[in-house]
Every structure is written in C-alpha cells, then in structure tokens.
View 1 (tube, rainbow, N blue to C red):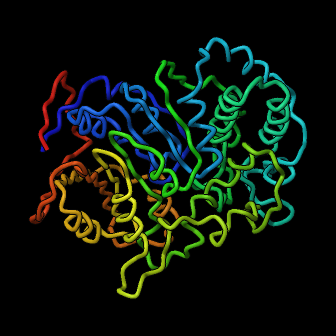
View 2 (tube, rainbow, N blue to C red):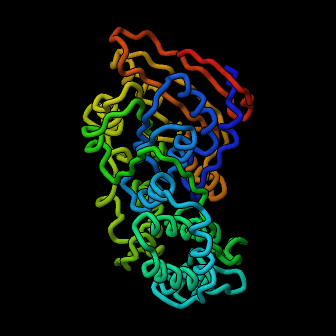
Length: 404
C-alpha cells in the first residue's frame, strides 16, 4: 500500500526527549490515516513526550493529553495549554542561561568530573551529567521557582530545561544505566531554548490520571492509545521496563522535591515497579497463559467513549499481534490494521550496542495501527487483513482519499 501524505504533515515540528517507543517517525502517516475519519476531538491516552499531541494540535484537532508521569503533564501544559508567544519567553530564558552555576542537590547526586573521559567517579558509580551542567541545573531549577508567574509558565520553562539537559546527558537513552565513558555530548554546555510553542484558541486539556478513571468521564471523537507495553523478551527483568524508572530524573526536576534515592543510578525510591508500575507493563499471565496486558487492552477499548479508537502496537511489546487481533475480532466491529516498518527506536538501538536482552524480533521493528470503528454496526468479523506501509517511502501529496 502506497500512502500519499499531505506535505504539511512532513513539515510539522514536534519536540521531545530521547524516549523508548517514540512515535516521531510515524506521525505523518498517523495524521494522514485519521484524516478521512473527519473527527474534531482526540484523546491521547498515554501521551509520554506529547509528540503525538503536538502533531494533532498542529493538525487542527482539539486534543486531550493524558499520562501518569509528572514530566508528561508538564510537557502537555507547555505545548497544549500555553497561550503566551515565544517572544514573551525569550528574555526569561536568556536570563536563566546567564545564571552562574552552583553546586547543589542535583550536582551531588548526578554530576561527575570529566576524569579524562571516564564517567566512573571516586565512589565507583557512573554519572549521567558532567558537573558543569548539573551546576547549571541546580541554579536554574531554583530560579524557575522564584520567577515563574503561573503554572503554565513554569511548565514551559521546565520543558525547556529538561530538553536542554537531555541533549547533554551520558546515558543509553534512559536513566537506569549510564555510560562508563562520557558521551561526546556530555562535554557540551547545556543551553535552554524557547520550546516550539503552538498557539491556538481551542479548549485543549491535560490530565494526569489512570486511563481507566479518565475514560469514564471523557467523550471524544477519537481516542489514540499507545500504552507502555513493556518488553517482549522473557529474559528482561520487569523492573527494567518501567517507564517511571526510565525517566525518574525528569520527575525530580519537575517536582524539585529532593527524594530519597536508591540503587547505583540514584533512582527515586518511589519509582520501583511495585509502586509505580502500570498494568500495561505487567509481565504476569492469567490462568489461561495470556498476558494480563491483553485483558487491560480489551477493557480499555470497551470502556472508551469514542467513535473511533486507534491502538498503536510495536512488535517488541509483551502483547502479541495475534492476541490483539483476537480481541478485535471478539468486539465484532469494523477494524483496519496498518503495518509499518521503520527504524528501530532508541531502546532497540541500545539493545544492539550493549548486546543485552536480544529479543525475538531479529532486529525487525514493526509498528501496527489498529483503527477500530466503535460506533459501527456489530457483526461477525472474518480474518482481519493487514495493510502494509513502508513509512520510509511515503509520498508527499496535496490530497489523498483513503477508505477504511
């Protein structure tokens, strides 16, 4: 299937951090695929870095972003709710960039000396940033609390700070393991920039709720779900696939609460898998040998109050394509499945470079979009066909009509 995509979708700019499962590469295809549905309101139920929400907002939709992560809520408030123009923030961010660094809590726990290239410090532990950047972080984070005039302004400044620190880290793409040797980018000096702000007058919304609590109280035209499925590899410890653990420092930067830390990576104590895990990251199976995440997906689709549900699934997840297809057949609703090949995401690249937990996908990365017509008539569904798209060879076009 050759998909012609509106040129504007290729030109959209979204921002985010290094993130496992990022949907940046499939955004043009996603926007083109939902365009024929003629919807106006969209729920991004697991918004993460909010790249999908940002793209949907630029596409003219009223967007409701939801995620349980504190930093995701901050990103959502920045990109969806902010009404102030970039030139308002420019002098504020210039001021923050000029503040002299100071040794504080972040430097104590996450900053390290260059050591001739070694990130291993005197205590035997690796650090994610060099001290010259954590000192900037300490000073700027303190100043933001003093000068931010309201919650949304604070979220814009924190988003800028997080993106700046993400560009100078020395990690493998998450915050539970740091590199032994400093990454070249770690020697650069962090510099805040005004985020790519999207200003409009639509009544967007940002939530930080358990998705099952939210869907009972919100009705939209379309719901887009990209749950944190967890790893498909049986050998990977469950504690290593928790998104809360992966990005714990962003939470601390947002809250600035100086939490109790544990482990060699100085993780927050409150992001352990027994405390902050999601049912969608669950690695256990039920009595029938089916992953509990499958039950959660089925319940979520059934409970969602929307005309359409678009479910995103990556072949590296615990759930299997076959199991999801069986759920959809049981719903007895019209379903379209789009299969897309694309470049491995950040975490998959890390797996290759560290030779850890090589999974069963043999290096093949496939993204599936399940487009479910919830309001359609109920009928027995035959075998659901899969349309294949190579998103590396999308064709720009002014108009494209797709019929599902």
